[in-house]
Structure formats: C-alpha cells, structure tokens
Image (cartoon, rainbow, N blue to C red; front, top):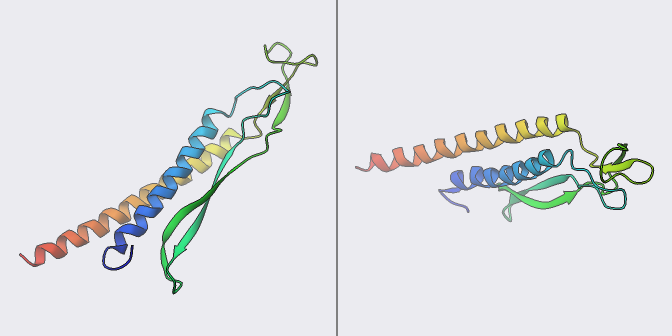
Length: 135
C-alpha cells in the first residue's frame, strides 16, 4: 500500500511477520522435549525468514515472511534406557534446540510485535485527529 495510508500498512506488515515468528517459536517451545525413536527424524526447529518490501524506487513498504526454514532432522541422541521409544542401545532422538534460546527469541518477537502495534495505533490516532479538523 502506498499513499496516505502507508503509515498503517507498514506496521501492519510488521505485525503479520512477527505473528508468524511467534507462531514458529511457540511450536518450537511446545516441542523442545519431543522424544522420537532413533529411526525417526527429530522435531525440526522452525525459523522464519523475513525480507523488506520495497516499491520500484527502493522505498520501504514494510516486511513480509519470505520463507520458513526447518532445523536439522537428525537432532541429538540422548541416553534414556527406560524410555518406551529407546532403541536397543537405550538411545532416543531429541530436537537440537535449547529452551532458553527459544524463550529469549520469544520475548524479542513479542516486544517487536508490541512496538508495531504501538506505531499502528499512533498512526491511526493521527488519521482520526486529521479527520476531526474538518468538522
């Protein structure tokens, strides 16, 4: 969107992108301890790749999700001989993720989303004030 309402479109695109990142991170957090047998792939960490949107003249028009990438399906092996999915050597497959890294990213994404909401609300309020001038 260009023109007078681009001040709304840019933070809205940021909110959409950060919502996708929050969704991916919530998947990661929910599956950080997912156990699989050694003959199955591990849960693959989700990564959201964002890119800037520009018009033909190089002027920024917000962001968009370019793609979602997945982590390593080999994960990491863990010795848990009492686990029902353990192989004959007592090994199971876990995702190669760290909960503290996921939570740190989750906080960053949440704050970035909130900042985009604040920018959107301020732009909306400015447009509303401009409409009131004409009354």
